[in-house]
Every structure is written in structure tokens, then in C-alpha cells.
Length: 264
Image (cartoon, rainbow, N blue to C red):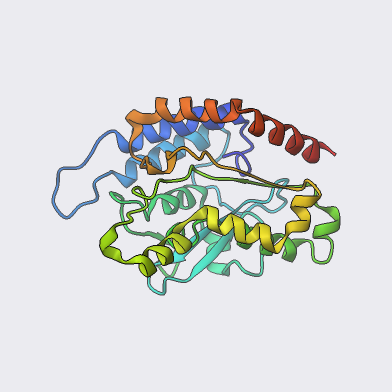
């Protein structure tokens, strides 16, 4: 919404809240069917497009994008992840780049969630795709690679800063850790499925960016990751915890430094 539809932050928040309310409020009681209505979500996405002045079948890719946007989808059959970009990219398969609509991209981002259809069909060949969040828990390394392909040999010298925003860290219990798993398996699970571990690995590989005040990571460390995306009744709690996080003195200082780096 922010990068592809050119909506401002307030518009994005309002549209997201409305989309979540409509998408997750009504549950299907039919056996062997998705718990939530995927088509209802698609209809709401089309409404957002219309309100923003776009055709309902507008492609995700733009001919001259003012803001480059990338999301990651997984081939449902091979389980291989691909970038879907709003710009020309050598890593984005041509059948995805030339045919995927904004609505399909939005549907695919929900396709890996429990309660939704497992995949979205995109392209003339009828390929099935879902969101890559199960195998790419924090795409910072992938985005860095994409940026390097867009600005080869210029990225580090021209970069203002990198801002990575997390969805909130989960507690050990929320990550599904149990004593019965055994210590080795628990540690493996934490490493593979922890976005903060991925953020730390990126920091270690690019520590010079952090030293120069050009790398920032914001993620609420209060168990917010335990809340599932369909728990819309807890939206108020999410807002309250987020406000508390942003009012913390250390976070406020980091945000001021981040803003200064962005506007330089």
C-alpha cells in the first residue's frame, strides 16, 4: 500500500484495519474449506485499489516505479522462493512479473496463513504460489541482494540507511518450544524461525552500517509475536503496546537518528 499504491501512512493504517476486520471476522463452517473467505479479501483489496484510483486488475509491476517494492512468494510445488517486484528484476520470473496483479500479490501474502487457501494461482500456466514467510522469516538479506542488483557497486556508498521493521518478538512458549523437543532441536527451531536471529546475522555481516548509523531495526520485544494475524479483537492491545514501545527513551533516540539518516 505504502510503496505500490502511494498511500500515506494514515491511509495505510486505516485500510489495513478495515481489511483485517473484513477478512477475519466471518469464518466458514464448511468442512474441507478454508476457515476464511479468500474472495472476500480479494473484494476488499479491489475496493482499496478503486479508492486509490487504480483498475481492479492493475499489475503489481510498474513501467516507471518511483518506489521499488519487492515481496517474496513461494512456488507451492517446488517450495522455492522468488521475489515479486514492482520493477524489472533478473531474479523475478517473467511469468510472475508480467502477469501478477496487485490483488493476487495481496492474496498470496495471506496464502500461507492458517485458515486461508493454501495457494493462489498466478499466470497463464496456472502456477500455484503462497507467501514465503515460513522459509524467509526476515527478508533483510534478500532485500539487500535485490538492492545490490539494482545499484551494483553503488549501494553502500549511496545508501542513506536501512530500516528493518519486525512484527514483534514471540516468547519462548509462543515459538512452540517444549522440553520434549530436546535441546538441540529447540536451538535449531529458534535459529531457523526467529526473525531477530536473522537481523543479528545481517548486523554481524554489515556491522560497518550500524557503526555509521545507517542500519536500524525496530521490533517490539514484549511478546507481541504471540498474537496471531487473525486475532482482530486484540488490535487495541497491539496499538497500546506499540505506543509504549515508541515512547521508550532508547527507541525515541534511535528513531531520531533514523530520521536524520533518511533525510540526509
